[in-house]
Length: 252
Image 1 (cartoon, one colour):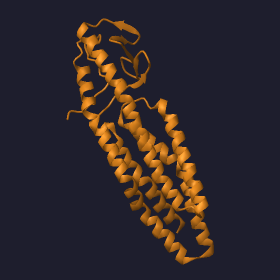
Image 2 (cartoon, rainbow, N blue to C red; image 1 turned 180 degrees about the vertical axis):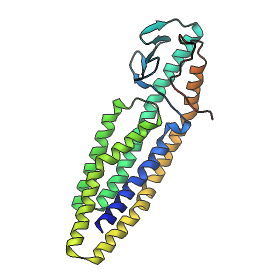
Image 3 (cartoon, rainbow, N blue to C red; image 1 turned 60 degrees about the vertical axis):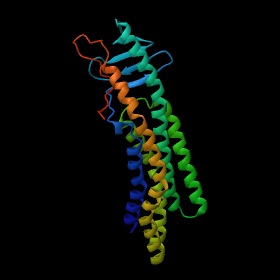
Image 4 (cartoon, rainbow, N blue to C red; image 1 turned 135 degrees about the vertical axis):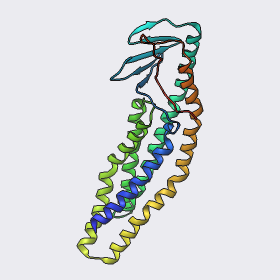
């Protein structure tokens, strides 16, 4: 019985997170980048661990490739300024969507954990601990979430689940053990019914918020495609004749 309850509860807790992550993906636009991005007051720095170029800097119309300042014409300088301006505008919005997705996931999982707490006091304490964990995670991720691709939102969702799963398992296990020791079949049936129904309850609770996240994420798609187009219009070529390919967005 304990294993059944645990499986049901974990399923309820984890079911909402992938849906939220999907809705929060700016990558629904087909966004991809091999680079991490650092946004500094005076420049944008794109870095990757393998491949060339390994580092590209854009700063007020200038371009550095692997540390070397490269010559650009007036049209490219304008494009670079426009691209930098748009990236600076987009990144906070992307971070905001990701942080809100984590917040919704923590709320949903907190509801599940509280539902399996032993009493109201324990439920309130469990919800408060999970809320603090979510707040701490969002603060920690505020400066480190700096890549523009799907995997980052998925990583936040995975961190969400991993950080609170011990709390959830503890609550369910405590309830299951208590019932197992007392042999109360009525309580066992009630707990299993609660576990079986919690997934629908959580889904209803987060559906409206996740749809709003989806709307916000999809509204960024035209701007991301315009940014990709701006990059493709650069006259500048790398030493081997290739274009810069810092970001790629699938066609509409």
